[in-house]
Image (cartoon, rainbow, N blue to C red; front, side, top):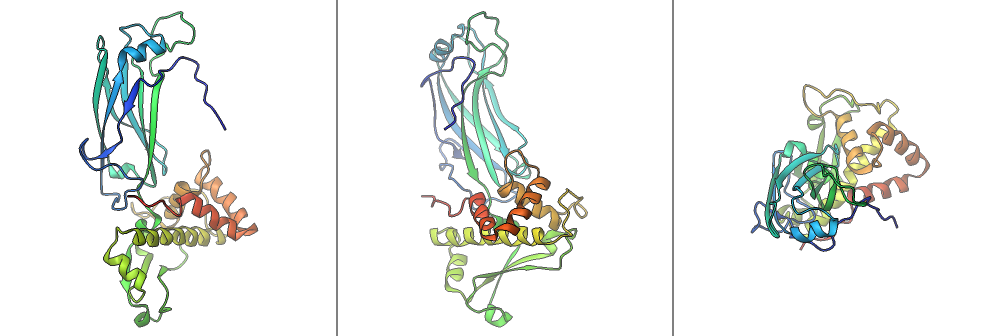
Length: 307
C-alpha cells in the first residue's frame, strides 16, 4: 500500500465536498457511468463545497490573509490532457465559505474515462520561514477526485438491428461485428457495423429498454467483444502500423480507432499507444486468454449496476 507524503501541512476534516451532480446542484447525482453520452454532448457538472477557512489556515500554519483558490480540473483517459473547468478565489477574512462549483466539459475534449479533480491551493507565493508550511502558489492543500465512465466501446460504432435468420447469420447469436476489409487507413465509420440480432430475445429486450440493468450488462459484454475483436485483429496483422498516422479527411480511421481503444482501455499510465500495441502483440501471442482478461479489466467489466 502506497502513502503519499506531502512536504507541508494539510488540513484535517476542514473541507466537506458534496457529491457531484448533473447540470446543477439540485440535479441528479453523477452516476459511475453516463450511458447516453456521445462526443456531441457536453457534460455539465455542479457541486457544493463547504470550506472551514479559518480551520484550513490553522491546520496548514498559514497567516489569516493567505490567498486561497478553489479550482477544478478534468482530463479524459483518451488523451490525459488537463483542462481547467472552474476556479475562484476564496474570501480573505471569512471564517467559513460555501462555494457553488459549476463546470461544463465540451464533448469534443472527452472520451473513455473522465477524471474530475477539485483542488484548494495557495493562490499566491507566501513568504514564511516556518517549516512544513506551503509557500509556493499552486501548492495543493486539499483535493479529491471522481472518475466517471463516459462511453463503452460499443458507443464508438454504428449499429443496425437485423434478423439474423433472414440475413443468413447464426439465428441464436446476439451480434456480429462486421469489418469491411483490412485497410487500416480507411474511415472507421464507413468500414464497421455492429449488427444486433432482433431474433434474440435478450437483444430485443435490450433494444426496447436500453437503460435497464439487463440491457446495460448486455451492452457492456458487447463492448468487451468489440475491443477484443478489433484490437485483436490489428495485433494479428503484421501490416498494422503501431505509429500514429493521419486520419482520412478529418475522419477517424480504422487504425486511429484501434489506437484510441488501446489508449483508453489497455495502455499503462506511462505508455504511448505504439508501445502498448507492441507489448500487447507479444502478450496476445503468448496467451490469448490473458489478453481477453486484460480487456475485461481495462473496460471495467462487469460494471457495478448504477442505482
